[in-house]
Length: 341
Length: 222
Image (cartoon, rainbow over the protein chains, first blue to last red):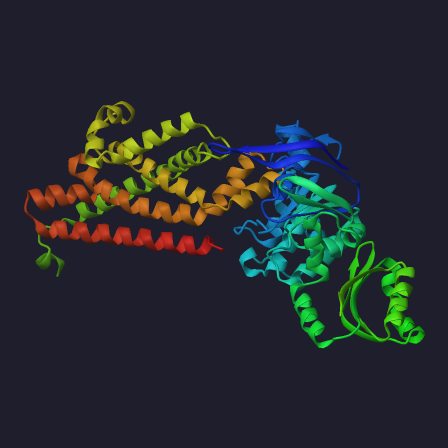
């Protein structure tokens, strides 16, 4: 559906040049939710704008839905853009139009008849759950409702690709989740390909199938979300994964607990997929004569399975503890001893 | 009562003069609105980083606007006399004042339009582009509606300036309340006529401000 080859974008400022995107190759399949994560300034905003021709690459080719976006312009580019919609961090609604008129805007651009337009707008309002708000102005809506209008507007012309430019970054956590659920829902119902950029690993974890990590204009790592979570390679990826699995406060708690537990071992277990759902700890307690103390645990759901971490403290006879650890290793659960007390 | 307090006021003349002032103001406001929007759009769209970025056209339009904005209005009328004579056929009366009024006010309003357009959210323009909007769609469905409150409050200010321009034009033969105050009031030393003309001009200005504020409030949904 989307294919980028050797894409580079250089901005010229007064005296220097900035490589916003540097030799990026990327393939995105039809029907997939693909996430691009990076800190601000990593070049992800530029990258997503290359996909609908709002920016043109300095080098390389950009193909989306069978069209060479880097080459076409004028009328051809405008008609291609009707298949590649975009939603924005700050929603970018027209304040002078009501919800209904905002959603009708892309239909006006496409030249749809007024009666058809009204019908289509009603369908879209239902799809995004904004019944009763048709005649409200954007200033009367909450952030989440505004983004729903943005999504309805983006879906109006039945696009093949939806680009999300930090679509949830201006929303509170609860609203973020409801918008992400809506995106998954339309991805499944309409078979839409979704490309999103974000700086929040939570968003990637919750809805993406595959992820690419961007730093300094380059894609430093990409792959299946679950694989990247289990085995992050680049340092920046490790930092992003920690956003979800180990918030800073967790490490502080563990440091505090380590002072209290003077014996035994503290280990961190990482479960992926089905293993995350098995009752392993109770087995250990039954089979080995060790004290098990759960310090912290978390299971996160991704689109392709669950992913969990558990930090536990083993206390008891040294050899028995070793045996228990060996047992866990044999279960193909990743284990890391983080403290030997 | 009016006869004793305002002995020199001839009311039929006052009514004619008021009509002329309102006529000159209305026609020139209307023309200034359209001409100013065209100038403002040109200034905005050709400026750096915008859709028709063109340094040559931008500097040219900006220079013309600045020159006409800087010439004192009373001098502009005199400079434009040959032009007025050519297109209106006379240099006397309300119609003869119109070219100078419009040429004096449109550049002033054009700058206000440019400022209003610059306030339109760049993201909204980007969103329209991402939907495949043409240039004319962006102008007529995004730029102008989104800046309309500022455009209306700008034309209100310009209209009030135009009322005082008509008075100046009146002094050199365009008719209207300015003409009445100058010829009947000042030159014949009938200060009651000047007083009535002043009050009427103030009333016109208040009404313009009131209408402008009402429209701005009604269309601003932000």
